[in-house]
Image (cartoon, rainbow, N blue to C red; front, side, top):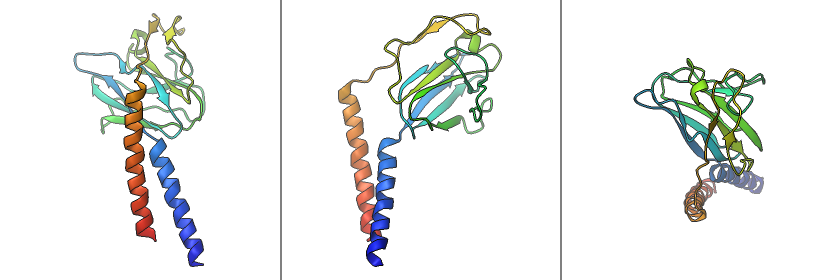
Length: 180
């Protein structure tokens, strides 16, 4: 019986380890001083299932509303769409990515912000296209826009991943020591 409890504890610790290693927070800045109408970055190109997108409100009246297409200024018709308050009291809005693959689109529905280019996309599971360009605007939009994805060098990504795995390994080993 004691051996079974140890195995269950170990499995639980490994589950925590896997979740910690692979999930990350991705910050998207919203607006800014002087009436800035943008999400920065406009397109998140490296999201994975379990990651948390954190929209950080920097100034101005803004919100985050899920839509059904790139540069669309219409609220999503899908069940369970995400939507923040305008200027949340915490200064942030968070969404944990549930999808394994796909694209999540969003925009600011305040005034004419979306029509002025305040929209973005979250590419999940390696779905980002080589070139990110909206060639046509949505029916409610008046102008197209383009965005270039931010690229990280593989060396920078490796160092970040190494630090994350090292930290997670330390936590799991501490848990195992504590549990056994």
